[in-house]
Structure formats: structure tokens, C-alpha cells
Length: 435
Image 1 (cartoon, rainbow, N blue to C red):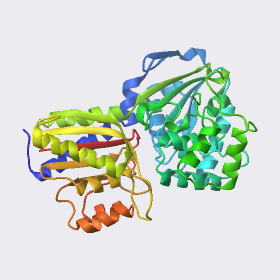
Image 2 (cartoon, rainbow, N blue to C red):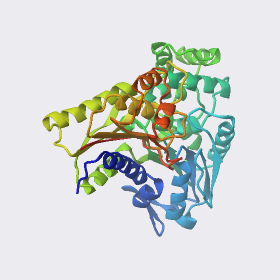
Image 3 (tube, rainbow, N blue to C red):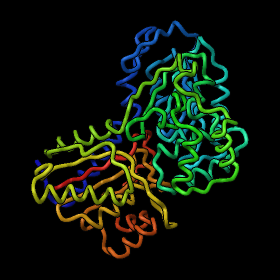
Image 4 (cartoon, one colour):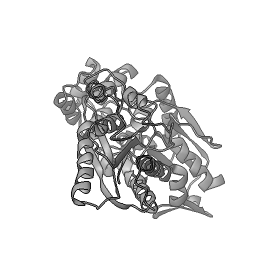
């Protein structure tokens, strides 16, 4: 039975979001997608004859990498020889070595861990089956500065790009051309091994060349593209980075490998979880609660505070006209919004989204927005759940939004959703409950 009070609406919005996170956890996803039957390994619709290989190893990185590794250990048992993954959310494993890194800005320990990962990659041969785990967050967690660049160069560049409002496609075009591993270069290190890449996508549209900056797939972007991003967004980067990119544009650096590179001949890619995985689970939970449901889109992007107003408008239309759904209803969306940072506050895209929505929401409506990895921006919150009564001081909230200081405003209102690291990362999830 549908309950219409404010507490129930906020509670349902939060429950649906958490159901989406749970559905995208590697323990659930890998159990459904990967199975061993004797000497045959199934990954989604593909099969691999394990007796064709001397070793089966796991190599990769990302927010969910160690959770995927643990699930693969359960699926493969003694057929798995070992491996190395780099993550900021360690899980307990028996065969795969879990090394530390940091997200969203790369760190020294991430460089050291990625060096160990590359050493393991250099040791494989044609009789090795590599299960290459690439999940959201891998771009930051696998820093491998190309020759002539330092970790400091990567950190300054990453910070500037994240503050610029550039899309993840644009940010990663730059990252790929500053790395010895991204943009398909990990595949060149692994050749001639057989590589099956297992992907958890945190990218709108699931572009394989962008997820984790595409370490094992061909790269369609160029040095010129990377420079265009810096120029289009007026991003200031260390001189060494600009000089490196300009040298690449002028043909003085080897371009990232494209589709004609032989390194990809023995590489297959299997997308195991996407934003749709979380969205579908949120929809299911809402239907169980008796609500009519609709997926608005899994590709919502743009400035977070503006996208929030569009979601509010959907709720207003439903209440006024019964379109696109007649209330009580739940509308779910996914994707990845950005923030152009102009202040020096604390927050992230989902926190800005919910604070902006809280300023606009009318009665009978609640909204929850979370980053499925449990960390919005550089905060300890996944996101927040809000309604028309969340904010007691709307003027202060508007000031906080202008200062990119959403976290304390929502914290003071008791609106934060704090999950801790979730073990997965399939982009942002938003649940709009219209009573």
C-alpha cells in the first residue's frame, strides 16, 4: 500500500537508491555473470577453455576492483593463479594481491601500486589468461605518469580538470595522454596474453575508451583532443604537461594505440554492470512499494544545480497534469553531472544536485541523489535526500550553493546519505518520489 506522508517519501527515495547500489555490488554481479564448469569458464555470453592456459590471473584497478577480485576467487576456485589489483576499498582475498591507491586525485602510493601492477603485467605470456578488472575510479587509482611527467603534474592536472566542469570524456582524453598505462597502453603491455576485460561502467553511455580511461581498448582520442580540452575550459596545467601534449600533437610522442594495433587481437571486453543495473533495481523497489514508475534517463549530465531543476519540473508536471505519470509515482534517473567550481566550499555533484533541488521542491515530493561509490566529490557522503521542508534557512542555502559548499548545508539539515565505500561504482543515481 502506498503511504503518502513526508517521512515515507524520503524513506522510499533512500531505499530505492540503496537498492540500486546493492544490485551493482560485484558479489551479486559476478555471481550472475561468471561461472566455472570444470575446465570451462563462462563470462557473460563468452566461454574460455581453461586448459588452454598455464595461468589465470586477475590484474586491474578501480573502486570496485578488490570486490570483483574476491568474487572471481569464489567463482574460479583453484583455477585462479593469483593477480594484483589497486583500489581504495580493499576486500579480503586469498590469491589476488590488493594494493592501495587513492581517488579522485592520484597519490604516491597509487603510483607505487600501479608500478607493481605493471610488473605483473610484464611477466605474462601467450599461455596466460588475464582477467583485466576495470571499474569506475581506475583513472585516478592507476596513476602511471608517462616519461617526463611527475605525480605532482598529474595531481595538479586532475585537480584543475575536476574543477573546470569538463565532462569525464574530456577529462580522460587528457589523462590518457599523460599516462603510460591508459588509452590502450595496458593492452600493449599484456600482449601476447589472452585478455578478458571485465568492466563496471561509471561513464554515461558506457564508452569503453573512457571507463577507467580505457587501459585495454583502442583509444580514439589524440594529443590534439587533449589540448583542445585544456583550451576550451581555460584549464591551467603544469608547463611540463602542456609541453608533453604539444610534443605529442606535433608528432614527437607516440600516439595512443588505435583499432589497427595488434595488441588488441587477443583482447575481449565484457561489460558486467552499468548505471542501468542500479536504475533497474531502484525501479523494482519502487514497484514493490506500490508506485507507478518511469526511467527518465540513464544519461543525465550537465551542471548539477541546473539538472536538479529539470527533475523538480518533472515532479511539478506530474502533480499538475498527471504527466508523464499520475502520482503517486517514482521517477528514476542516472548519469553523471558536473560542477564548475567557483567557490572554495565542500561538496560534490550529488550534493549540489540535492541542495539545488531542495530550494525548488514543492510539497508531496522527495528526492534522493547519490554517487554509487559512496563518495560524492571529496566528501564522506554518498549524497543526500531532500524535500520541501529540508532547509530552514533558504538564503543561507543559496549562498552555500554559490560557494560550492553544499556538504555543510545538507549536514546541518540532517539530509546526508552516508554509506561509506560501497564496493562498486556505476555512476550517479537519483530517485524522485511524487506523492
